[in-house]
Amino acid sequence: MDIERVDPALRKATLKLPSTDPSKAWMRTAMRLATRIMPVSRIDGVTVSNVTIGSVRLRVYRPETSGGGGALLWIHGGGLLFGDARQDEVLCGETARELGIPIVSANYRFAPDHPFPAAIDDVHAAWVWLCEHARSLGADPSRLAIGGESAGGGLAAALVQRLHDEDGVQPVAQWLFAPMLDDRTAADRSLDEIDHWIWNNRANRVGWSGYVGEAIGAPDLPPYAVAARRTDLTGLPTAYIAVGDIELFFAEGEDYARRLQKAGVDVEFDIVPGAPHGFENWARDTQPANALMGRARAWLERALSPVQAVDNKRR
Image (cartoon, rainbow, N blue to C red; front, side):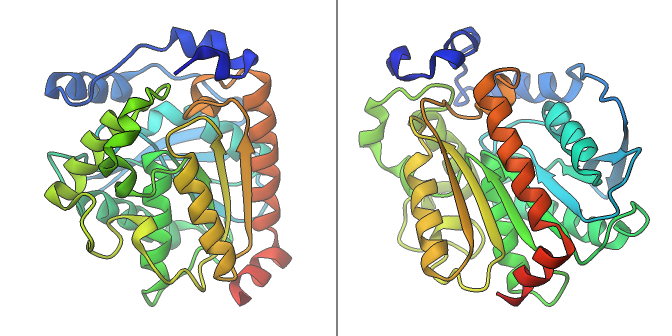
C-alpha cells in the first residue's frame, strides 16, 4: 500500500514497524514469547496485578483514585494467533487512571493450536470473574463494559452476543477498536492484491483459518465463532467502533456498525482518515492516536455513567 495514503503524522511510525509472516509457526512462537515477556511502562496512579483462573491469565489494573463507577473487560489483539495483555499496558493503565475504573485484561488460547471455541471460552471465563469480583475491585457490577482491539475487538463483539443469549450479567457497552469481525473478508482473495499496512488479507486468512478451520467463508458457522455472522443484532448494548479508513477491516467494521444501527442499537462509528490498523497502540504518542483515545474514553465514560447505563439496558 502506498505510504502516501497514510496520515503524515503516522508515516514515520508506520515505516518503522517490522513485517511478520504469521503463516510460519516459528514466527508465531516468537511473537507469543516476545509479547509475554516484553517490558512495560509503569503507569503512575495505577496498581497492576496478575490473576490466574484455571488456565486463563488476567492482568488487573486498579486506579488509586476510583471514580466509583463501572469497569471494563479488555481483550488484546494478535490475529487470534499471538499477543498478550502486556502489549496494551499503556492503553489499559491510562484508561483506568483517567476514568477511575478497574480494567481486567484477558489473555486467551491461540489458534491454530487451540481453535474455536477456546478463545471465546477463555474471555467468557474472564467476564464471569469480573462480574464476581466487581464490588471488591470498587466497581458497580451493573455498569460493566467489554472492549478490545483487532482480534480482541472481534472476540469482544462475539462475547457480547453470547452473553445476550445467556441468563446472566449483561454488559452495558461494547468498546471496539479496528475489530476483526468477519471471516468472509479473509476468504475474499481479491483483497490479497492490496498489501494493507500492518495486517493484510494473507495474514488475516492465516488467523481465521486457524480459528475456524476449513469452515472459513462457509455459508454457516457455529454461533459466536464470527461476530459478523450473527443475523439478529437487536438488543445488543450500545457500541463504539473505531477504524482507520485505509485498513483491511474498514468495510466489515462499517457494515457491522450499519447493521447494529438498523437493529436499533446506538452506535458511534469513529472513522480515522489515513490510519493503518491498530495505530492507537503502536503510534500512541502521535496526534491522531491521542485524539482518538480522547474521543473513545469520553464515550466510554458516558456509557458507564449511571444514567446512561440504565438507558442502555432499556434498549
